[in-house]
Length: 483
Image (cartoon, rainbow, N blue to C red; front, side, top):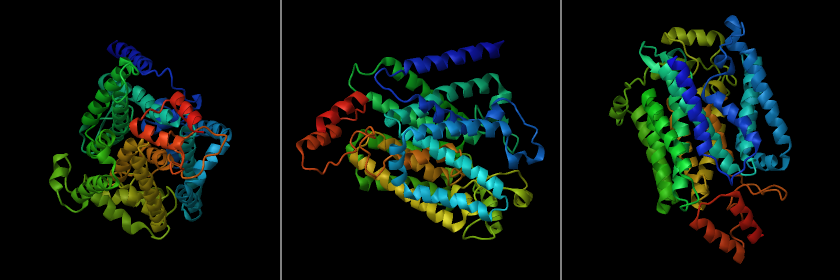
């Protein structure tokens, strides 16, 4: 009875959060619900897990996957492709301006040729392409800035209350046990690290949105929005703390501090200071994890010098790559006899290297590492450029970039349908260098050639520097004035 009452109350809370956060003057495409569903499945659990459906896959289910999951995700992917077919001009701009990402995915696609399990590798690559499709749906939305924030906030409004509900009233759904037998919180996710990662991404997005609303003029923002976002922040921080995921907890502060500084203070957005913050955040975490410099920080987070057995995993798997140049094929390392051999060596079940960079090396070799480095460098340059130009989402992208780089020190986040990977694709592709087609709506407020000697553009440059307003109505009026 208590569980039923709590479930009804949680549904009412979710409905109230959506109602309070309603933005009357902001319109995003209904197609945004497609990537919202995709990302929700990525941060929580598969459809078959939600429905407690096994599919009778037996021992081959890990290789073949669930037929229910395959059917649902294929349908969602097909709907996404249909949406993009109606946005061909805008999609072309993003594809043309993101050559490093296309090259990386092309190499991942052809790597099935030398995989021991080519059919599994190709199917997983096909699902990974779905991540790009979902990202393009968000970024080609007529008001893509609002679409990005709604994507994370909507998921948070559902995932956070449900996680608390599961943990408190349905422990068979929201709790688990660690390898040592200690009870852990999982919420709507599959394990404590996944819950921590969910809370990390949603928490940063909700704090950033709260800062945006705080900077707007009085009377333009309802109290309901502050209540909804404040409640979401409290829930995500609570889940982050209770999940006891050292990686997520450390990333939250490493990324959250630069995000707040760069949003509130213009001096913090200068390239030199931003570079120092990024190098400092990543340098501190890397030195504590790998160089034993400041290792006390790791112990204070409740972890030992072996990073909970991760160093043993790395030592065991690195010699197993037969071709270091090209790897074993996309998502192919943790399959068959290799997986059995690794589990025998480390005496535990495993399906990832617990390091994103090593994971890429195992599957794609040094070529994959080089291509991933090119994507990271491209994303880094765009983050710096966005901060220099004070684009609306620049500070949030900075935080997510730090999360992506640091999170992959101890977890494998460069994987298909992984929330960290999808978030990285969003920030890496969101500031196209190409020229916008004439028949498409503006992609962001200040994406114009400010170097033109024109009074109207000088007016826009000054106005954008003074305000971060991104309402569609304001943008249309500004473009009508300038063009």
